[in-house]
Image 1 (cartoon, rainbow, N blue to C red):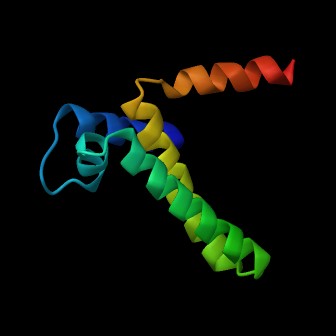
Image 2 (tube, helix red, strand yellow):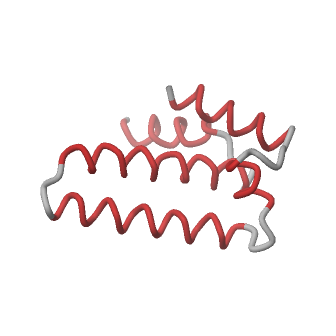
Length: 92
């Protein structure tokens, strides 16, 4: 699923449209700072959901945060495979 989502993000980056939230994040005037702000917002919402033990919100906010992390990686030209490689390296 992460690979599929990352490919959609990459496609929206290659072929941006004004209707694409992903393209607006990547090409926003604020650049990476805009993406980082969204990540901070989503992380805060996740923390609050965890603190309050709201499972459905934890799931929702985790998905939001993961999406924004993937957008950040795409904007920084970091391939998902590079993250997988690092995780594999740590597993050894």
